[in-house]
Amino acid sequence: MPTVEHLDVLIIGAGLSGIGAAHHLKETHPGRSVALLDMRDDLGGTWNLFRYPGIRSDSDMHTLGFGFRPWDEARTLADGPSILQYLRDTAAEDGTVEKIRFGHKVISAAWSSEDATWTVTCEVGGDTVELTCNFLLNCSGYYRYDEGFTPHFEGREDFKGEIIHPQHWPEDFDYTGKRVVVIGSGATAITLVPAMVEKAEHVTMLQRSPTYVTSLPYEDPVALKLRKVLPKKAAFGAVRWKNVMVQLAVYQLSQRRPAQMKKFFIANAAKQLPKGFDVKKHFTPKYNPWDQRLCVVPHGDLFKAIKRGDATIATDRIKTFTETGLELESGDTLDADVIITATGLNLLLFGGIEFSVDGTPVDMPDAVAYKGLMLSGVPNFAFAIGYTNASWTLKADLVGGYIGRLLSHMDKRGTKIATPQLDGDIETQPLLDFSAGYVQRSLGVLPKQGKKAPWTLKMNYPLDLAAFKFGKVDDGTMRFTKPAKKMAPASPSSNGKAPTATKTSKAA
Image 1 (cartoon, rainbow, N blue to C red):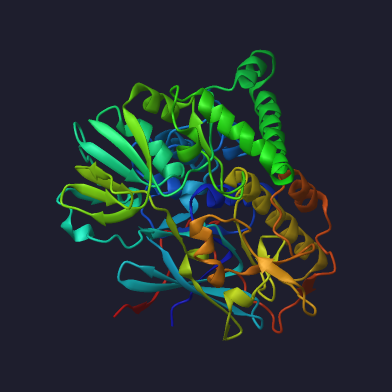
Image 2 (image 1 turned 90 degrees about the vertical axis):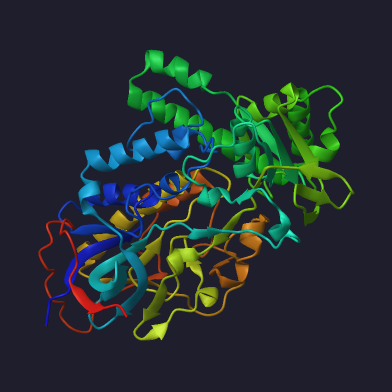
């Protein structure tokens, strides 16, 4: 019977989180065998998947970039291709790219306490492949890569033009001279509109309700000044912390003084819009700031497109699609050659993997998140979920560093198993306290969080930094144990560089 390949750590996902985690493990445990599994044929995750016009970050690159590898371009908000190249360069420089197994879709992960190992089953082409590992780290994000969210639209089949979801943008799609309607008001919509006006005849953003939109300069003036007087790494660190504290201050003020912050954001938008523009209708949300993610536009490009007359905003509901466009509930109509449904994402936590512990399936809605990175009762498993109020990478970096500390502590104690143990009942709440539609639609299938540490998912980078980097690993909640039987030695895998895993069966 063929030997199943064994690695010390398996990382699921080769995007921002996975590449960052691999770097941290190389720094803290260079002798451990590590491999990254990704279902796609290239690295980059989100930044490889989305190809729609104008795709860019909605977080500044000093915080979206890795703390260990400074972003050295002048732009505050970078375009998708630049971010993808940054990830490729990072993975190439530290050898992570050699550890990635592309085309590996993980379908299940089964933990054995007797062996202290995970058995991870993947689909690779038409085959089923098994790998085992001592520690499993999920860095696959939390949304479905194969489909976005599109609500039911009455009369959709009647429309004679093209309907496109941004998550599935056609390669080389030409919209030159066409009338475009973008349905949505989130980050994707406000990115598409100013990008498409350059070629389209006209672009209309149709929204059911407004979103808070603010502007950032193309280049950070503080960063430009600091680069002249400080070494690159020091300047990056200073700007990174400046941005972290500004983001946190805006978030905290929005939570504590929502009325004042609401006035601030609306007034800021009004200054950049044409005189007489109906700001109350089109840029005054019904919710408070940061109840949903704040949308950021580089140098006010959305406002400028509206001011020039290249783009318009319609705040209304769709009654039905027609042959030539949309009929709205108000009775107005929008003519279109192309309709883009920038209507959001579908969440799929942990890539839809089926987890089990000693033969019992893990019931995700009953699980409680430990420190926002592990699950109650699930041994040697961690995940990276970024902040909703700041850059994703800030949290992902902390998770990668913490796993290194956890493994070092286990080595020191001579234990092989680390399990967050929930003793007794605790009061729980949703894992993500966020009113965005894609979150609300999926709360029933997500784990929960508690209302006190260490079972809370904080949205505060400085507090998390202190807890993850300097807090006790052995905090009385994490249980450290040994397997029931002696573990078999790991198979030689050149630190995760084996070209393929052993095939265990042929898919039907």
